[in-house]
Image 1: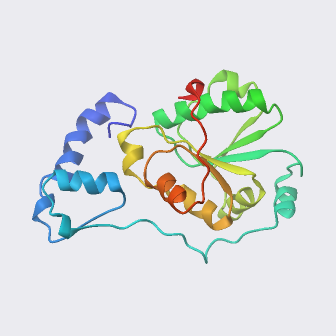
Image 2: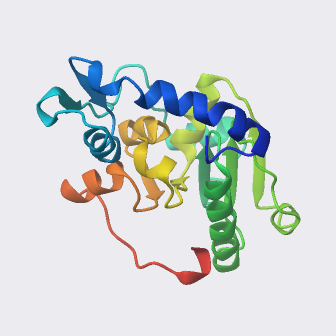
Image 3: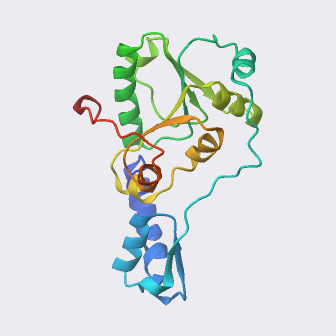
Length: 212
């Protein structure tokens, strides 16, 4: 709740959510969490380590249908040689700020790159980025069209600011991208980047102050 916009909503729902998440946590026989941050939080609340387990999300290898990149671009009317990046789903305010600041750097370095924000992202796009003509909002799209964007893109961007919410959650929007074998640009926050590094499936880039 601390990451959601609207002071009234945070004040109203925050204490209720905190109560139901924490008040009787130690009374359960077992506790499952989806991240190291939530595991450590559970222990801090008094949960015994032997009764807590981390259950990381897996990838569905059967439901995603990968298309030929050239055919996917043809269906989406995208040039074959153009650089294409996608960002899927809703963005928390801090994540949106990180994303938009990063796009300013990207567009300066690559004036022909096209970025597609797919789904209901819930953010206000800055005017200077709208005027570039390089950023497109698709809104909600059918699953088959989403699969075409995944097949057609060169890279997917998953902005995660260093906040409590990002450290605690698993970015499930990355799962179909991992299945498709698409490159992902993701902040080094939370469990997924560390897992990718551990499995030698990631390259850690230097941090630029301009986009922090």
